[in-house]
Length: 215
Length: 197
Image (cartoon, rainbow over all chains, first blue to last red; front, side, top):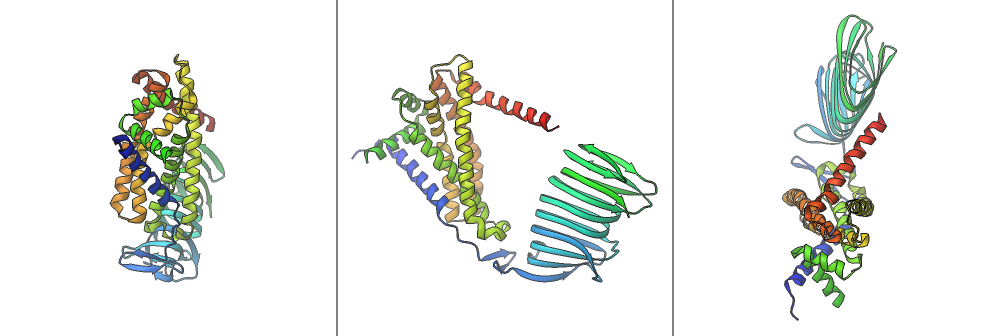
């Protein structure tokens, strides 16, 4: 049987079609282990551990998962991690970051993919960034706040001291802001409110919903 | 066996000489079944394989137990979107060609020709399929990079398809099948932005 060039190429194309289709329908086996850095971790249970953090300057990186920040009765900041952490200090999984009540230190949070929930945490200075996901909740800030989430949604209630001048900069496609009882709508915003020491609040995200109150 | 041989002949012909193959396809008033079947397989495979490839990265490990079903859902979703896209796109180009004074082409034939034009995407699809079996990161990188090249190749085949089906020169076919669509998408984007505001 003579096969011409067109037919031969056609059979190759057919083989590629079948190969692609088979590879896209064969069942995928769930992974049982994950390697982070040099170590293999069992995936079904994960690892639960507590990490003590710097008393005044906390920096935490989460690759994927949920990072929740709360105030509790702890004496120094600590992270309760259900998941894994690489040698480079990047975590995967669920993290509960506990800060002492009335904490006035510096908190630097970075989330690649997931959720950052601020559940009434008190901090002196907060810097938070997220690549994919959302940032929401309530945070009490005394010195400064910077939140970056380029294409994400930020929904925050920020509690600031009575005697400060809030300097708010919002860089967003859409924003809805309530500062000291006055509401502002639109895209990017730059405004000040109150008298006293300046307290800069910078928020950059796709959509921003902010409530700034005194307390 | 004869059917398989005939299908192989058409596939090879489209790859080697799309203009000639498309011309014969129209002249013989062939059914769109083979090209639409190819288009369907490639759309499903690409959708599912991209997710399967990404799923092998450590970052997706926590989602591992649901990645199997998720890859089928992604494949079917991409397939659904691609089929709607095939119908809407070919209908739009058919309309534009008519407005440009080219009424001779059949829409059904154009669907078939555009289906054939998805053939270049089989190259990245095959590479991504190889990655599922041998997860070498370079295979994924080359596969994704090749998508751009095969996209251009595929667009060229669509232009040829429009030229042959509607009896236009390639310049006018480019206007009808590429420029008009880009302009329509830009217009839609402006309208949606105005609507949101």
